Image (cartoon, rainbow, N blue to C red; front, side):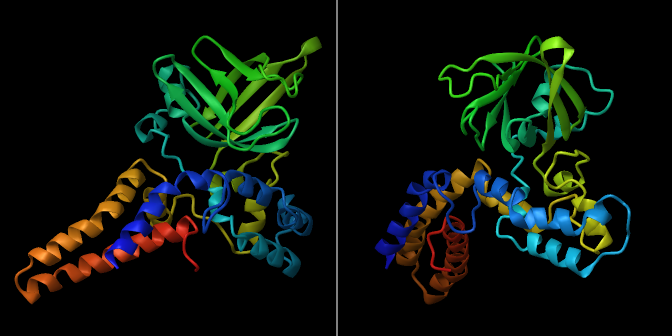
Length: 310
């Protein structure tokens, strides 16, 4: 009935925030993605494909092929590529080896990143630039004992760079260490911390994209060498998102998603009004394609949020 449809659509809007509490439907939370990257499936690829990764061999063994296939079949595999809705495309084009450290640099670094932390391994971080203060802040999407999820891990501005110190574990008020930002290109950066007696610690970051992570030449990355092994086994990942991935990103992870959910809420009233105002059967039949399109989009959204049985 129309009332049931409206209640279902209302539940879609009211449960948007629940996605951040636990995994629903097709969605994988950042913690689920990190669990996959540090799982037995990922370690199995590293163990069975070690010779391919080190370029000692170019022959893909059945064991290596099977391990890669199992890793790629994991539910959260496609979610290794995170939404980059915050990354301004026009700014990122100007970032290269010869970049100048400026406000444009910080703006272009917005988006989601994988970072390697010496204390906890790989983490997901979202970088957001605040134009009013001129500060780029990296907020943990996956937490550890030093910085919980949802808290700022580091901040960078034109005049400063600081990272939450790992020496103050569990402190309510974070203590900060000075750092230095190095940008290799639009998809790779490093934060270097100066320690005692001339020592230093490096936090390396790569943009949260599946092909970029697999290609990341970082020895401590849990997927280091995976790209070489996959190419040898005839399995590669596209550097650009597919049309399906792009549409899914637009549908579920942009500011337009809010508008879409609001439209799904009121569209049954529009259909009902059109049906009642239609004087002829032919005019009413014109509403059928709109109804089918509405049901399809509604099902996709509800399925993504885990509100369907399928």
